Length: 176
Image (cartoon, rainbow, N blue to C red):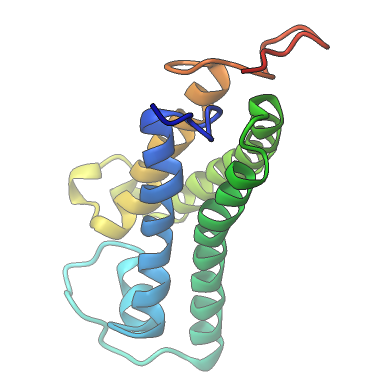
């Protein structure tokens, strides 16, 4: 039986943070850059009865959407490349893996909360308490990010995994 080289990120956490989350952040970036484009993305940020944008974006708005998509792309790169580097560089050191993941999850969790707040506050009043009227973009920016945040908190709490650093007494981390 092969040894698990990434014990700090087991099972569902590995699937979620190493595969699903990067895919969910790469996808909007590619959609903005290639198709359907920045105008479509901008139009979808707040649910509308109109399925397509009716006006062209001002150049500053286009630039801001492209920059936002670059932030999505960066988040995907961090989850994909940095987490894999942690796994590959520290295969026999789950405490060090957990410390680095913990620092990353803390930064991502803070970004999750600020993203949720900004997305929610930006919604028109009539949509804030009507999730059934939200579109996939609004659910992605609020519902999915709440889900990711809750799983970061669950990871910190040690739910469904062995803790190697967090929750251990100083100097007494478990080593496999």
